[in-house]
Length: 291
Image 1 (cartoon, rainbow, N blue to C red):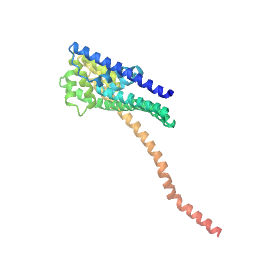
Image 2 (cartoon, rainbow, N blue to C red):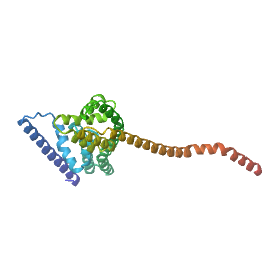
Image 3 (cartoon, rainbow, N blue to C red):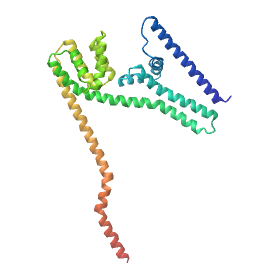
Image 4 (cartoon, rainbow, N blue to C red):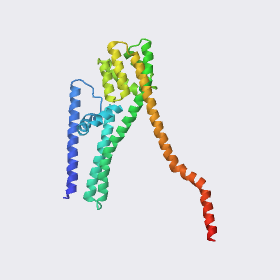
């Protein structure tokens, strides 16, 4: 038997064994849940993505679950979709490359498939990291709108929990990203967990500096019961100054880019218009001297 064909058979057998073990573990977990009276809400594919593939991906790359949590993809279906995209396509391409090596006449296609398998394995993580960075920027921008709303709610006599509930129920359009995270925090608080601890965990997970500073002040309000409105006002001024500095940096960079565009595109046309008649006159004078 051809060595590459034998490798393909062994790879397929290993994948089959791993799938059997994974499904056996899932069915055992569901059987245990049914015995103790817990409802089995997830399907087999969701269990496969949330527990089996998720645990293997955690062992391979511990950054992926953190990025998924920061993106807000905490449901098993979304995690299963991401893990399936990142692991399924590279395995299929590797299998196709091995089959091309075994039965194909040209090895160049197999090399391209190997390269594409590695690329497809790395691209989803880069796309996820870029999406998380965009979401963090949106959350940082929403914090500047959240602080004045909290100050107004605190001034009318609301507690921290009441103010957060108002933001979640009435501020979906103003704070779309923060309302999702705060709703999850409040649901955990309703389950009996400490609100301040859950807010700190949310800030630590999302890793946004503006949100971390705001949560520190809210935690102070929860513990002391007051005296932090001045801190909120100072934080709002600090965030506004930081945003103004960022905008000034962006404008300065944009002006430098526009100068480069002007030099590269406008300067040749300006040179032709201004120096063109002079060069034409010089050429005509040289032609007259030649005659």
